[in-house]
Structure formats: structure tokens, C-alpha cells
Image 1 (tube, protein in one colour):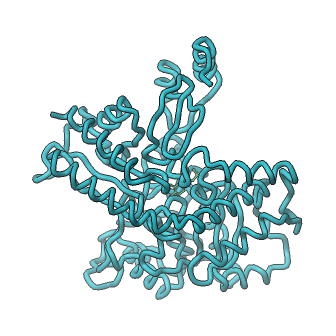
Image 2 (image 1 turned 60 degrees about the horizontal axis):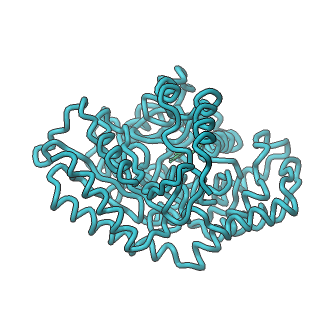
Image 3 (image 1 turned 180 degrees about the vertical axis):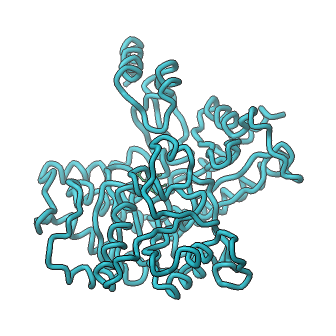
Length: 452
Ligand code: PLP
């Protein structure tokens, strides 16, 4: 039911007054108010309080994988909340959904990633992974192994360690601080990481290991497919080469599967596209399709076995580590993914999306570098794609395109990866149908006319 206009105006006013929004210009927000006040949704569609319907072309924050208004997830939450909304996981207290989900994750995760440490989201998971990696090396008698290597263009979250690993300058400028010992390597250099074409000073992971000394490095962290940094799919052989490099140098490999996990890339986990098993794997977002706040670090058996030798308290944990309602939603989410064969569906829809991208490339000479792995996809806008001449930054091509889509009731996102904001992320709910995909492509086609 639509809200009265006066109520909508009141909400917008309160929003401006009382709600400081993440990753938003506070000044612009106070001047302009909320862009949309969402009220409800169904599948790929979301509605605002004025009764306008939009297509959610990016699954909100790459997380609403099963789409909006999924009643079974809501029921699972309701049922668990009515029974036992919360219980502690500290000092060996436990609860059934958290135990069952841990067992399920161990069976789903590749290789021997058999134990989980729960958190409430992606940033907490990455900070936890860094702590676990350092703690592991201390237990192994190598306390000097503390440094972390991340990749340029990475996004790992905003808690202080995760934010240091994040390589988007705006996040560092905001906090004005980074923790020491986290370095960034140039991504996706397959030959280099194999040692074949590697030259000293080139900035690849191998280079940083040589520069800093393997004895000082705890872990390498990377997203199997880089998301917010620009949707960059690694070349084949890259993750395998990084895995081998880590093994050679006794360094742990952390895969940040916060976006990639739970079907987004057409496999249950992103690393499975390349047959790689990391030592630690961080998860969040898609584990509950955004219906509850849940994250975690999956841990390989050899690390888990070392950790359980520790007699003192493992002094780390969040109030909501192992939250029963969030875990019940996670279990139901995985049950639906499997029951409805959604990962097969994602691979089919990937082909539809690629077909749509080819159509857009044929019709619009500014569209190029289209890419998709499962339903994690994007493309770039160039003034002249043949010579890769970018638009003048003042044009803000990506933002203009996204605004044109928005006018046509499609929500997409332009990534800041390069200051031109010319990378467009496309990442609809995994449940999208062929007809809905066509609808989305037609809106993009129409929006691109604005550049003619
Ligand atoms: N890691 C990746 C790859 C992400 O994309 C994100 C969020 O977008 C995070 C970590 C941080 O997760 P959260 O916002 O849940 O803390």
C-alpha cells in the first residue's frame, strides 16, 4: 500500500536530518535527500514508497542473490526468531542453526576448508582472516610472519585492516590511516607469478615477496574475480600460479569470496572456476542473499588442527558470531540454491547476458570490454573504443549512463575504478529469467541512445 505524500515527505526530511549514509556525499545527501526510499520487492523488482517499480540490476550490493520478497527466507527467519532469536557462541555455548550451517559449509566448500569462524559481514571476515593467519604463524613458531599482500584494484571492506587491504584511494583518504604491513601488488600477471617473465621491480606478488622476504609475510589475499574495483576476471592460470607461489614460499592464500561465493560466478565458489583451494576463504553477502547479516572465514584442516592445539582463549569474536537467525537464513538460502538448481541457471543466464552484451556492442560504438562470469559482469564506455580513448572525465560517462538507466527504472552502478567512472557493473539476482534479462538489455540499449 502506498504511503500518503505527506508521510513520504516526512520520511525524506528525517532521512536528511538523522541518517548519515555510508559511501554517500553527506553534503549532496542533505541537499537532495534520499534517492529512493525502498518499500518492498519481488524477484528482480523493487518498489519505492511512491509506488515506482525498478529492476535491481546489481542485486543491491551484489548480495540479494535469490531476489527480493523471497518468502521462504523470511519464513526461516521468522521461525527461528520466534523460537530463539539469539544465543551466545562465546565460551562454548552453541545453537543448532550455527552448527548445522557449519557442517553444511564444510561439505560445500572446496578441498578441506572444513571449519568456519562466523562474523556479521565481509569486512569483519577479512580482519578475522588476517588475525587467524598471523596467529597461525605464531603458533607455528614464526611470529615474524605478519605482513599481508593484497592486489591493486581490490575491495575488502572498511574495518581498519580490511580497509588497508582495499585499494580504492577514497577509502584511505576518508580514514586518514592504514595499519602497517599491508602491501599491494599488480594483479593478474600469470607469467610473472610463475616466475617465467618476471623482472625485479615490476610490482607483481612475486616481486613483493622477494622485496619483503617470505619470512615476514603471513598471507596473500585476493578476490577470485575483483568486484567493486572494476569487475576484473583473472586470466586462466593466475589463481593457480598464486596458489603455487604461496606454497613455494610458505605463505597462506586467502580468497575473498564475499561477492563470488554462493553461485554468483556460476560455481558455488569463485575459486572453483580454476580448481584452486585457498587456505582461508572469507564469505558474506550471498550466504543469506542479504536477508540477514552473516559472514565467516572458512579454514583449512591443517590450520584448524593447529588452532585447536591452543589452550588459552582464542580472544576474538563478535557478539553476532553464529547468530541463530542469520544461520537459519543461510541454511535455507543454500537449500534453495541447491533445490532449484540455481547454479546451472546462472550459467545459462550468463550466456543470455553475453548475448545481450554483444547486441549492445553491435549497436553502440562506445560499449566495449564486456565481461561476465556467471552473473558477475560489467562493461566499459569509451569515447572511441578502437583507440581506447576515454571520455573526458568531466563527462562522467558511466554516471550519466547509470542515471539514464535509472530514469528508465533500471538500477545499475558505475564503478569508480578509474576516475572516469566508466566501468558499469551488471549483476542481477541469480533468479533472473530470460525475459527479464532481455528487458534489462533493452533498457540499457535505450539509455545508450543518450550518448548519440
Ligand atoms: N569483500 C568484498 C569482495 C566485497 O565486495 C565487500 C563489500 O562489498 C566486502 C569484502 C566487505 O563486506 P561488508 O560490506 O559486508 O563488510
